[in-house]
Length: 335
Image 1 (cartoon, rainbow, N blue to C red):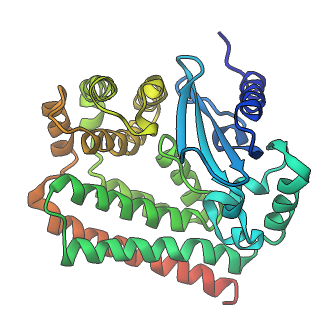
Image 2: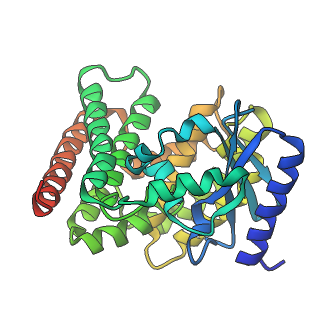
């Protein structure tokens, strides 16, 4: 079956129509995510990102559902209070950015969302609003670094989780100067382009070093992806998986990571594979079938308990460089 933007938009509309019948307090619904881009497919797969806004109470925070093997629904549930006051959303990248795109509204009671959208869009890209979005991300990354140095977690995977969070927050701060938040699957592709546009490609090279990217990736990626696929299925069969790792997301991750591994820059696969595979192990209460291969993956990337202190020092330098670049951007715009 051909997966086109028209097919995806129709599926989104049909989903919202069904929800207006089953969820009577539904107040508004709109699109976010990859459907806002020209090409939502990666490895022949995608998801439909929806935000459903309820008047009073959201039934769950997030749910993912299968539409086809290649397409899943990723639904966030919010309440109207999450959008008040609307002008403050100019300083919220996750909620604010999608609302600057027109033609995203699928359902809107009393034109409520149109008003929110017009308020958020006004002066959204003004420099002070940009800095109000990115500086908290950088501050959070620095706080994580302090935690890793002063009170590191006892378990290594918890340390790695925080370490990746710091990398994600800091790179999103820099990339956020000119665009919306980075997504897991396209993290390195999009970051590469943003840093080129900002004239700071050296930061991308530094991230490659922090992630331990090397030529071994091209040699070992098949075994890694096979083990990752098995562990993702194992999680769905043995554990109440978090929504983003549900069974309906199997192809969404596996096919896209394979596509990246066979592309011009195989290292693009490292972030989505590392971040998602780590989430699987953090969710499991027992050893996975692919544990030994997972361990080899970490070893190849030079992630182990013995190098934590060295990684922390490298992270410190990385954050310093990003802080300097954002300060330079701030000075350029007269703040």
